[in-house]
Image 1: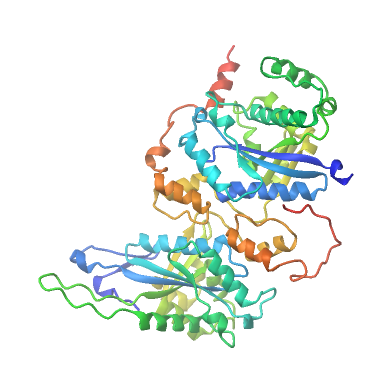
Image 2: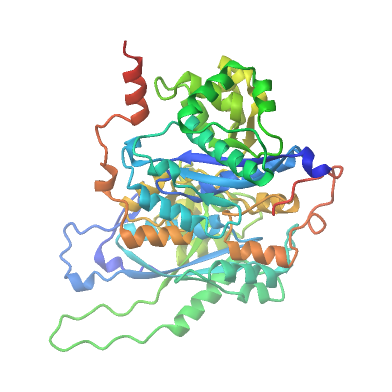
Length: 280
Length: 280
């Protein structure tokens, strides 16, 4: 009886993972401890979804390397895995779509297991289904989801939360969908900045019960940017990334001034797309 | 021990010792680097990725000066007689350090200090290891006929590796003997690793003895904010929280296997029992 009261949760982290670091991996651990600690959730899986090359971020090295590094990094994890779907898409995929993809995947496999009748719309009919969901109230859409299906939640750092404010980086309807239909688990060092950001945003404020702020007491600011910089300067990155990742980077000489110049001068895909679509 | 004074070193107050070739005509062969061994003393209760980072950052910094070649790192866990709160038995701390260093090709753990019948002042540990280095140093090389005379094989310089907070403790009355501080900075030397943004120079300039030997104090900066304090680790462990990616997996496995740092072994359970989701 106890088990059915808890909601199963899958944590999804999107990002460049260029490269993956111990900090990324810590996000999962912190989030799981927190969600399990509420007594309401049981975290059953973590998914790392590296962004596709079409994202066109400066310094982004080819996806297959980033995937392999993430796989090496999670080799010793029994619950966090890497998913390549997003990185294999030809065009850049919005985060909301990635969340949707994984939620639908979970619902599909849940249906297979339970042999339920609810027909999940696929491909062509997807749009109609999502339109329906957006029109109904949040409560209604939750009830439409078969019980027992794990819920996908977006796992991120405070920087992603605050990036919601960058013009044209996110579609406002995507932000709404992410916090309304899925939920956000945000690991933050200084909880107050994130809280302030939520306070100052009407849509985030409305769905604040679906946004979990988790304090990271052990400051662990291992940004990928710093890793790449250290590598360019011939400095050690040991103990900042898993050993297997460090060895892989060294073996393939992945990061240099040349690699850092990739996509220089090219507009980031979301900015490109959202600005283009905004044009009359 | 300033073995290289004959080469005409200059030092720059802001950057520690910097080799200068100006006005000194030295044949390439004479510019042999001074071998250095780094010694870190501490509780290592338990050892964390941050401790391991100290070594990496210090080594990079010394290599960058062009003067030194770091050939070895030694971790010397303090003995149980130090009587620090929550200090687990030294054989455990030594074992954990050994596991953490399994994959390091230059850092090792030395149990000598932990095996002594009473607590040892840091300077005595330095003296001991210096003696050991003298004992195991190869004899001077004979000169090769027809070639320029090579510099004698230098005995490695032993330097104390620490976080910059140790510099601060030198100011605490009665914590260190003045003669010991002098011996440490005069005879051996300090390599202090501080967090980016923290300027420990004032700790040096405010204390006459440190100011006098500031040329023998190397300040390395760790650009990655990595405050993995062992205290937090112990707290997290006692609360059943994950510490994965903050310490090597092998150390975590050891801690679990020997039930170290559990709620019972650390501080008393002050708060009421809370049911926590267990990490699977």
